Image (tube, rainbow, N blue to C red):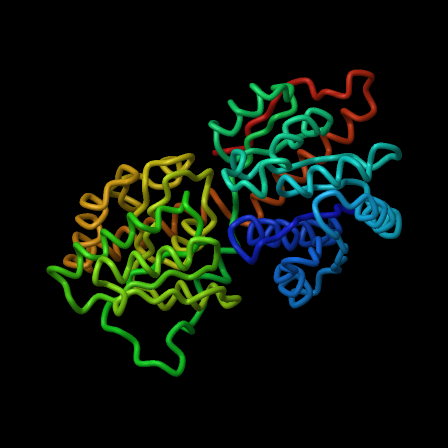
Amino acid sequence: MTVFQLVSSQGFYGMESMMLTLARGLDALGVRSVVGVFEDGRQAHTEVGDMARSHGLPVEIIRCNGRLDVGAAARLRAALDRYQATVLHTHGYKADTYGYAATLFGPVVRVATSHNWPSRERSMRAYAVFDRLVLRQFGGVAIVSERVRERLERAGVAPARIHTIWNGVDTEAFRAANPTLWEGKTRPRRVVGCVGRLSAEKGGEVFLKAAQLVKASEPDVQFVWVGEGPCRREWEQAADRLGVAADVWFAGTRTDMPGVYASLDMLVLPSLEEAMPMCLLEAMAAARPVVATRVGAVPRLIENGRTGLLVDPNEPGPLADAILRLLRDPEWAQSLARKGAEHVGRQFSAEALATRYSELYRLAIEARGRTSGVADAGTSYAN
């Protein structure tokens, strides 16, 4: 079996990390994976392709000129034929849309992962609207949050085609990493980090307000945000306005993520909305203590007070208090980190991820051969 993993990327973030982890895990199971990445002439983010090549995976870059490029669907169709793909696995609205158009005719089975609910960004709204329609025609749609299930069902996706599969992570890669973030710099005594795209739903201003509160009593703490996105200038201005600009480093995009997590004393996720964030899985696999908001599937990953700390979203005060608790009790913080790493290793490994998706592919292929084209029942592979 050959699975063509397709994404339209805006950098190397959670979706891209999950897709690469899955592709490598499938290869280990004997399921061939090809990584397909759209190259947009306006913003040519193909970093995930570079990462895939570094791991020995075949990569196909598909040129796409604008939002409605009929030629892109034809180029994708040719790539699927060239690799003799059995399954097209799409990640994200644009990949779903072009993937559907490219496979209207022919034997390729369509599977999608709906990583989150429709984007609020204006540039993505057209894709989000059409996405709800095309996903009805997919043989299987994987989700990582029950809130996503509810929205898909309201959009008309058959419940029997929706399958819960939690994200997974290459635990060994993160457990064995050495720090890399401060190479060439003097490492601050204590570092609190965020990892993710700089977009509104990630809660950047909440993080900055919490940083201001933490700095008032623990002035030696350095904050860092790893990632890029449309809110960077706005958040840099907010940091200046709050008086913490010198204490918050917007580090931009990094490709050495295991080394980044190894460089942090803790990871904070201040998001207002999430499904199951890869950054939490990766930080926990790296044995970093974590503080996160109670959004999406995060409470399924973090048991409050045992594998990490949970706070309500959009609350800078409680977020700052949780950060201070871990900073002031490093032994307890390390106990949470150890238990978090054990939990991720048991329940959210790359092997488990690949096994669950290979089963979804099998179900979708079998469903394609039936008259209804719908699997008998929706499946949950989550533990």
